[in-house]
Structures are given as structure tokens and as C-alpha cells.
Image (cartoon, rainbow, N blue to C red):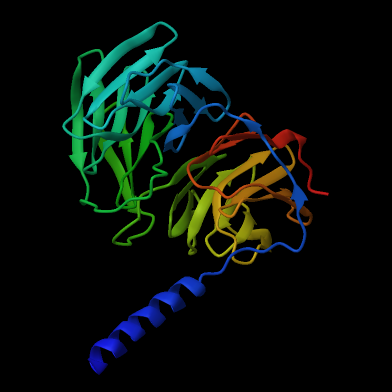
Length: 333
């Protein structure tokens, strides 16, 4: 009986210690801020867009009424066409005219980019390939290591001239020549066993920037540079890389990943971040919205409600829970 009591007490202490040990960002001062009602709900989040319950879609630049079929969600868009998919391997290409093309895959499509007549895709089982809409068939397919847990911010393939960079779910970049369907190069950004998919893929000038939740990688003619830190978000501007780290730091880097400036917000856990003109925005999960200048020398914190679901920034507006915040009206001093 005594052993059972001691065991129960030990478990209770362990649970209490684990819960009480979690620490949260506590800014010194905040400004009150309330948004307008969205009248809708974010039901799916992708790297380049968010799907609303109404069937409308938020892209990085606008809100679009695509009239999505039930069960379909937005993946990516290109040249006035949107790529949508469901959980059963079906995908559609939508324009203002409606569905103009469709394809069916053996697994759910989780990332994809439309390049002319091709769809370069990544499936849920980490198979990837190229589908040719003119022939209505897959013309290239390959597979990478099976994964069991991924970050939902899955990067889409990136077209660079005749090449396409395919980000796999196990932290690898596969560079494919779209004209010959031959692999040019493969490289790993990081090699963790779980939550290691590519969550960001972009380009500054001739430098490729990629990130997993564990590392940021810069690739150029000068070679590879790495930033070994846990990552919440990565955003690029004309000549800078902004990394929002798990430990509450916001880092401004050059394209070689050398630190230009940084600011730490102790215990902040960023759920979404954005850049706009001369401002940097970062939303902490407790509902604190940080607005800073791009040199990170000045900042102001606004107090919102706790973030309980998806959050997304579109056209200088922050959408989360049932609220819309006009970011362009906020200041850092």
C-alpha cells in the first residue's frame, strides 16, 4: 500500500513539475489591440496558403473565392491557377473558369507546384514525381525515406530556370532537370528522424535558402552555409533572411547566414511571422503580437487573445481564430 502511495505521489509530482516548468513570454509592457470578426474559420494551413470553412482561400497576397469542393484544400498557386487536393489522392487545378484539370495519386498530395504542363508533387508517403497534364499521366516518380511525423508547414517545389528543387519530407532537396527528368543533385538540409521535412524553400539572388524545423541552409556558388538552430519560421526579403527561432530569438541574416542583427524575446513561441515594408511581425502563441523594425532595434508589443488554432498572414492582414488584424496600421514605436 505504501509503495502504491509513493508511486502515485511520485507521478503527481512529476506531472506537476512538468506543467509548472513550462515558461511563457511576458513582455514588460503591451498595447491593447482588437481585430474585426472574420466571420469564417481557417480549417487547413499550407506553406503558401490557408483554406477557410467557406471554401475561400487565403494566399500570401489576397483572399480568393475558389469554391473548393468539399474535402479539398488549397496547396499552391501559379499563373492564375490554383492547386487543390483532398486526403485521398485527388487533386484539381482551378482557375476562374472552375476545374480545368485533375489527377489522381495513390496517396494524398501534400506539396506541389505547377510548371507549364507539369505538376511537380510530393505525396504523404514521401514519394515524389512529375505529372504531365497533356499526357494525363505521371512521367517521373521516385521515393525518399518513409517518415512518421512531419511539420505541417510543408514547403512546395521551387522552379529555377529548367531546374526544379523538390523538398522531401525527410529533410532532403532533390534537384531535377524538368526538361530531361534527370536528377542533377541531392542534398540533406538536416537528418533528424522526425519532424524533419523542409518547411521553407526560397531564393535570394542566386542563393537558395532552405530550412527544416532543425536547421537553415544556404546554397550558392560560394558553397553551403548552415545555421544550426530550432526554427519556428523563416522569411526572406530582397537581401535578408529572417529566422524566428524556437528559443524566442528573431535573427536577421544575410544570404550567407551571417547574423546582421538579433533580438531575443525570452520564452516566446512564435506561431506565425511576416514582413511588410519596413516592419517585422511575430505572433506569440499566448497572443502577443510583436512589431519591430527590420534592424530589430525597435519594437512594440500588442496584446491579443491566445492563439488556439491556425494563423496566417495574407495581404498585410493577420487571420487567426475568428479575428482579422490590419498589420499595416500597427507601429513599432
